[in-house]
Amino acid sequence: MKSAIRLTAAERDRAMRRLRDLTVGTAVASIVAMAGLGTVAAASNSGSTADSGTTTAAAAGSTSGSTATLGSTSTSSSSGLAAATTAPTTTSGNAHVSSGSS
Image (cartoon, rainbow, N blue to C red; front, side):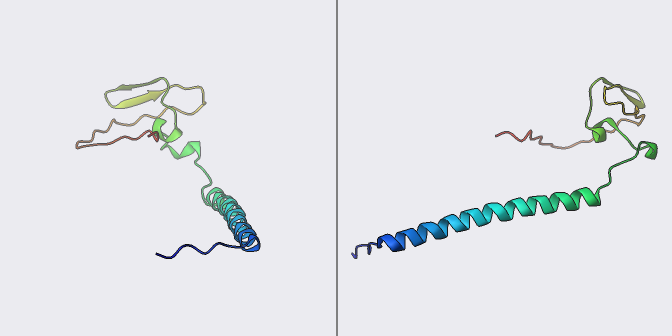
């Protein structure tokens, strides 16, 4: 079995400098990519307007104070969104919900 060839101090320094340059380059590239994707997402999604008539509690991200009765859903929250009146929907089958934690 051959033993590993030991590197000189200059070769080790060059390898460490190359590793540091790759690490810094990766971090900078990821920040630029995140900013670019955020800009594209912000430019392409202008949001929704209240007069569209399709605002629901789930789409607004708020379910505080919601009550469901036969045929309508009433939402009262502090976000100032209009109440949505839609028929409740039902689904059947297996479902899996993930909260994002491990």
